[in-house]
Figure (cartoon, rainbow, N blue to C red):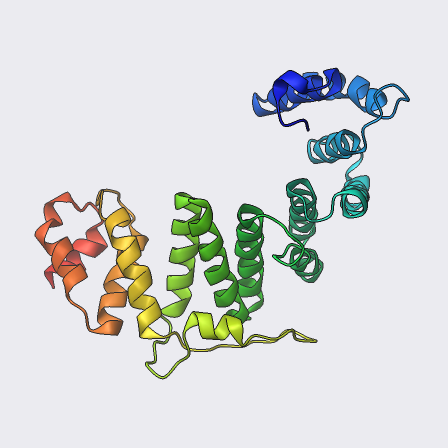
Length: 276
């Protein structure tokens, strides 16, 4: 859309109203309103390929058509954007929506294929690349293919850091740490080495590479100030991972911090471990 609301066309402004309706949960009103917008986006007077594609994508996602047609409609949006604005944020969003649709249908391999089209070389922005890598990693974990899952989580983490996406970085870091603590080996390559030396595979598999302790320590030290800002909560598996990391690396400092603040901890399992 236009870079300034003052130069936006009437169709662009009305499309923003439609998106506001969706954000406020006014789905039925939004669907009704978007019928006219879709017609206008195809008209001779207001023809706009991007708005038509965005409208069709949003309408598919909120159930404007038979469920059997949703995947086909999302694929149309991807193909159209690939032709007219490849690598744009909207193109990346369309790919992400299509990949998530495949995941929800239980079609994990198809989802991974679509996710692979969201990449730096194509010009997709970091935020969408990060979200795509995070979802790819979760699919690979489900398939038991843990080496590429860890690489995707690390890449997601880097993307989120670059964009200042603190919550998303926290999630990807914790999911990476949960896998990494299965085996820590000082002779293992670092995550950056693993990413730099990775190569496409013709088929998947059940792969595993131990984590490097330097990577584990750097992630924990990044997480500690955030996670320990508030120690309350009945189920703090995140703090449990910090304790496990300390045991694996033979570092007692993180546990000592928690012991000094044990009165703030509400998770009985953590209290038992710290007092044992």
